[in-house]
Length: 153
Image 1: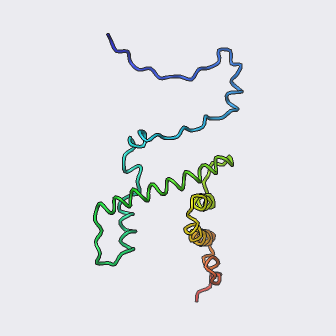
Image 2: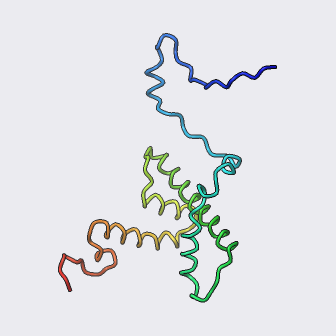
Image 3: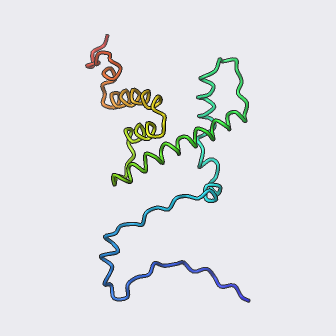
């Protein structure tokens, strides 16, 4: 039994071109969810936040003399990455229902509230307002302070 070389699978095209407009107007097919087996095939570095970033954040939360075990860092790395995926998938679902392609800050806040993280969502609203004020060049307005109009104090 001889092995045949693999051939690419091509999408079926109408022979006389009659339904091409209808097929094009439907847009691309909806993405299929990723299975657990496919997730396992991704490299760890592609699924998780960088361990150096996680470690730096963890170190900032403990006294300078404290040490953090490698397995603790890896555990938090996995948990944080999973949490981000969880929240983002909920926000993405909202965007898909509203036929939008971009996930915004409000979508993340909505997802957090929907999933039972209201306390964190309230804190993030403040940070989002500060970020937007900073990006617009007016950092004093979000924190309740007076706006800096380019004058030196």
